[in-house]
Length: 280
Ligand code: P6P
Image (cartoon, rainbow, N blue to C red; front, side):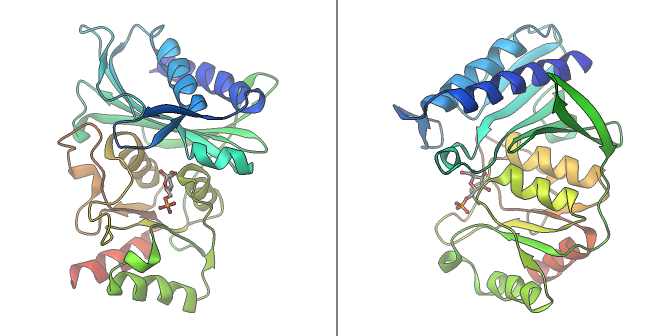
């Protein structure tokens, strides 16, 4: 596992450099879920693949930016799914973006998810790695990711990050989100999954929600390399998560780019989501 974390760290340092120095423009290509790719999306995907190719323990990789899985070594143990540059469209307005990684042992079945990691590229570059019961927070300083602290979530938070187009929310979902505001929750939503979830993790908790909507009934966020890694991290940090009806860590993706409705947060807020959705 250490060599995979090392590969992620090397890729993150190179991606930071790409973000800081390369101009951004759209390519003529689209990814498997129809997003028009920035040149930067393609470059950061190549960076991740190059660094993962140096890790002998990686069997296969799945990237948001590639339609099909890439087999590296059929005799190896780990399967890595990743989004190399999530929220890349925010770069041209100078907002934080991130990379997300799910590390699976033996297959991409959710039961085999054994570690998860994300990197936030903002005023600072920070990395969070969840493995063997602990969520560790690192800060990039002088070319090294230095351990800062372990992350644990409070039982109840005060932030809400409500994703999705409000006009397409179900009435019961809108009533639930409005209820949090009436309880004094503060809105924290940038449109970047990684910084929005990082803020909730580091500021003691709350709720990030990206529900099924009338235009996207299966949600927008991808299972293998967005929803499941964060479900793993929030659960390991003492929080909780759901797709509205199920524990996300019990549902397998049928297709490598499948999406799911997803809710991540402190136990209090997720209990509220489960209660509201169970009554529909
Ligand atoms: P919306 C970025 O494009 C992304 O995939 C996630 O990072 C983010 O949480 C979500 O989409 C934002 O989607 O529909 O709220 O703009």
